[in-house]
Amino acid sequence: MKNGFSVFLASLVALGASWFGLVYGPLKQLGGAKETVVLQSDAKWPQQRTGDATLGLQVYRSVGCAACHTEQVRQTGVACELTLTGLGVQKPADFIAFTKALFVLPELASYTNAIAASLDGWNGGLPKTLLTSSDKDVVAEMADRLKAVGVRSETRIVATGADITRGWGQRQSVAADYLYDQPVQLGGLRAGPDLSNIGVRSPDLSWQLQHLYAPRSLVNNSTMPAFRFLFTVRKIGAPAAPDALVLPKEFAPADGYEVVPTADAKQLAAYLVSLKNNVPLYEAPFTPIPAAK
Image 1 (tube, helix red, strand yellow):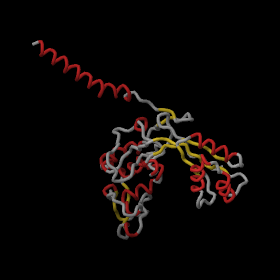
Image 2 (image 1 turned 30 degrees about the horizontal axis):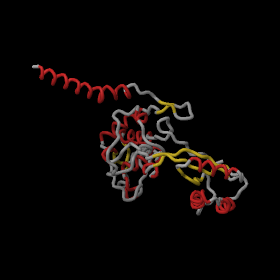
Image 3 (image 1 turned 90 degrees about the vertical axis):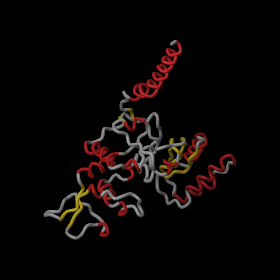
Image 4 (image 1 turned 45 degrees about the vertical axis):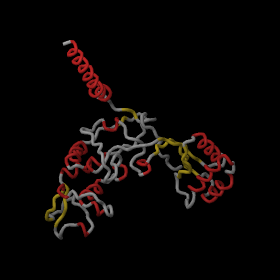
């Protein structure tokens, strides 16, 4: 009897600890989560999605997009980046010559060589990234040297990692990004690219709709299946549907017919365009790309 009570008490403690750790803890941490503030701004994040985009999340879920795509950008660290934003009175060729001739300090040789290499083939377009390094002191010293010759530059914090290099985001995904998503579509397989900021990379609704109907009409050798069941192929009326897709001949229907997106297709496209996790947050900082001056 005495041993039975001890077993019961131990089980109760174990189950209670598990409940607090797996249920109550996350609920306490995230259940009351509210909008956060974008760094160096009064803007709130995330913004509530439009009605079509909110409905589009359910379409995204129902057609199984999360089976091939993720919505979670990963990063491995941060670095300092030196960006040229203005040449002043200097010409591009003169600036390139300056970078090759002036930076001769042995302790900075590897960094100056990196700057010279970044300018190989440069035609003067701005902004231009000159150097990325985990040593912020070196980046600051290089910025001071550029200032001395009358050019303008900015240093900024950037996230690093394979996903960032691929252009899938400017920083890692964090819990705040999913505040208005129910259910959250993190995904676990990348047969296709991550979609966390597809609304930044491809913000055109028409592009998204065409891509859903005929992926290979826009992306050569795409392995994405065509979601043609989200569209209606019908005879062209008088007048033609204003939202009919404009397709290359090899993907277009027979003469006299048009492809019209259904409400589900439009909502899914609206959801994809709404995916724009591209603002700096306290828990995921970065410095936005400067504009050319």
